Every structure is written in C-alpha cells, then in structure tokens.
Amino acid sequence: MTSQRPQLAGVAVGIWGFGKEGQSLARTAAAEGAARIDAVDDAGRGTLDAPTDIANLSLWRGAEHLARLADCDVVFLSPGIPWHQPFFAELRAAGATLSSAADWYLHRYAAQTVGVTGTKGKSTTASFLSHLLRRLGADAVVAGNIGTPLSDLEPAPDAVVVAELSSQQCALVTASPRISVITNLFEDHLDWHGDIDAYHGAKANIFSHGGEVLITTPQVLAALERLGIAPPPVVRTVDAADVTRPEGDYVMAYEHNVVNGALAAVAAAEVIGRPVTEDEYLGAVTTFEALPHRLQVVRRTGDVRWIDDTLATTGESVVAALRSMRPDDRVALIVGGMDRQLDYDQIDDYLLSGARDVHLIQGPTNGTAIGRRFAAARPACVHPVDSLQAAVQVAAAVPGVTAVLLSPGAASYDLYANYVAKAAAFCELIDAVSPSN
Image (tube, rainbow, N blue to C red; front, side, top):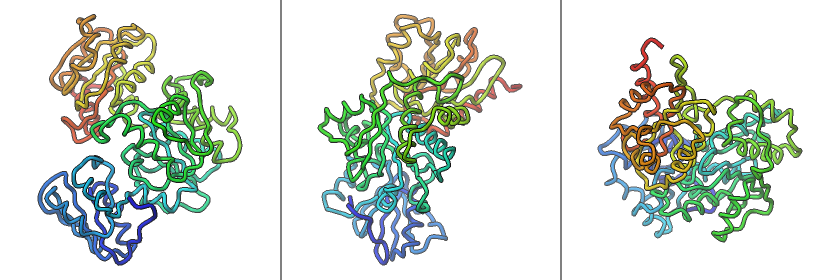
C-alpha cells in the first residue's frame, strides 16, 4: 500500500474490480490524466466493451488477465478482494504501489471526515450521524460503503463527510479520518481476513494512520488492548449502562441502536465543538427513517408485518433484530445463507430464553446450522425448508403470526447476487402468497 496519494498523471493505472468503486476510480484516473488504465474484473470471463466516456481505458473480465496489473505504476483495489488472494499477496510482496477509493480520498480530505466502522450498525450509525449533523446546521454527507464511492467526492472546505468503511476498506487505507467511530467488534468476514484477530486488526486500521479521535465502547477498547493496538490520542467511550433509551417506536430507539445513536451524538459533538442537547438529539431520533434492508417493513398483510433485515449476517445481528420485535409478537424468523462457519450459539441462547415467541424457519444454505439446540428442544417450532419460496409460504401459515422477519444470519451470495437481490425475491414471494395485499 502507498503511504501517500499516488500521482496518476502520465502513468499506467491498474484497477482490480469494476463495480461501482472501480468505475469511479477509472473516471478519477482519466480526469487526472492517466496515460493508460487497465481494469480487470476477475469475477467472470470474456472481454467487455469499455465505457466510451472514460479515456484510455481497457477493460477485461477473468482472472487470467490479472497479470496485466503487474505492469501498472499504481493499482487500485476493490474492497472485495480477499487479503490472502495469491496475486494480491504477490503484489504486496513485490512492493507495488497499491491504493483504493477510500485511501485516495482520505489522503486529501481526512481532516474533514468522520470514519464509521464496526461489525454491525455502521450504516445506521453513519446515516444517523449525517442526519444529526445536518439538523445541527452542518453541510454533511454520508458516503463510502453505504453508497457513493469516496473517490467521487470533492467536498467543500467546510463540509463534513461521514464515511462508512467496511473492514476490507479499512484494511486498505494508509491515511485515517480525523475522527473514527467503531460501533462494535464481533465475528465476521473470516473468509476475507483469515481469522478474528486479523479482522479486528483491520477495523483498527481506520485510526492507525494519523487518526486523532476514537469514539467507541469499552468492549471495543478491551478487544484492541488484547491485540496490543494503541488507540489514538483522544478516546471517547459510550457505555451502554449509561445510555438512556429514547421513548417511542423509532429506529434509534431499538435496543441495538441505542448505543449507536449515543456514539453518533458524541461524534457530532466532536465535529461542532460542543455537546449535542437532549432536544437536538431527540429531534433527530424522531425524524430519522430506517435504512433499506435493516429491519425495514416492506409489506403488511392483514395483521402481519413482513420485515426485510437481509443485512443481518451474523448471530449478533439476528438477536438484535429479535430484541427489536414487539414483546407480544409471534415472529416467524427466516434464517440461512452462505455458510461462513460462524458461531450461532447466541441465537440458540436467545431463542431458548423465551424472550420472544418465535417459529424458526431454516432456509438454505446453512439454515439448519442456526438454532440447532432450539430445534432439539422445541421441534414443533422449527421448520427446515429448501428455498426462500418455501420459507415465505411456511411463514405465512404460522398460526397467529404477526411478524415475518427475514434476518438470515448469513450473507446472500450462496444463491443470490447480493442482499438486494435476495430482498427483492422476498418481496416478490410475499406478493405471490398474498396477491391482494
């Protein structure tokens, strides 16, 4: 990785991955005057036509073209490339100049950026922080992993950018935002990082290159201390025991979002230079809407709420979703997705506690690995199925059901292109079951 922003004028630029970020970087390289832009997307095969509005761009699809990147002066990497991918390791070992969309952006705009990461809650926290800052009069925008590539941005000098950063994006940065927020650290993305320590270390990289302020929880600080990672000069902590839960049926009043909201308020105070008042905070809470695919009610059929929570890809996030259900709900919980060998004991613990009335629907691919102890103890409440279609049909038929929760506890890439595709299929299947609603 580079420790400074690479110069692109007159050089050969390589781009590994041609999704949203890759295309943004190709346009950035062209605008900077790159002599040649070689983009390789190793997710498929065959030659693609390059977009005609990007000068000096050649585009290939297929892993056999990766060697072209070794002949480039600088290579921009998409965040989905695993750290242990052999050719990626070869580039690092060869001392290649490597960068990313987030790294490119941060080398110029770190001073006016709040970076937000964490295993879960980072999108909601980043979005709520941006919403809160705008209500406080700041020129704030949210970007990064949540949508707009950071390389698309050229913020005004007085603007504040709230950058949501995934662990993969954090691992690739060599410049840190002035303020960093880490919501929590659980187990996730082990297929990308190799083990949980490497995953947590990648998250910590968000502040390790000149970051000034870290806003987080005591639990995250303990995890960093265990790894021997020193925090930045200023640390602000939010302890769940000290946070008051807002009243009302609001997104930021859900149990798992209470700390996220408090973290955002502390970050906002750091930006504006004074504490956020209670009225200012509650005003933001009552006007903030749920993000897509995060406990989003997508359909209502009679008394039943159909809830898309496809971004719940860990056991912790499934439990958080169940805790957010109403105490008197009968919940049909649909789980299952790509098997990443995660630990799901916390789901069993919660289901067996009886805190919510739950029928567990175990879908493909790894659904039967989720709730094994619950299935053994209460087999009448567990329904293994072989498709999302069957899961929706079973959920609709659960007697007295009031909430159908698609909170898979796993990524969607086993059977779907991504979580958006899985959520779209969920909605279509609901409409097929209840076409008149």
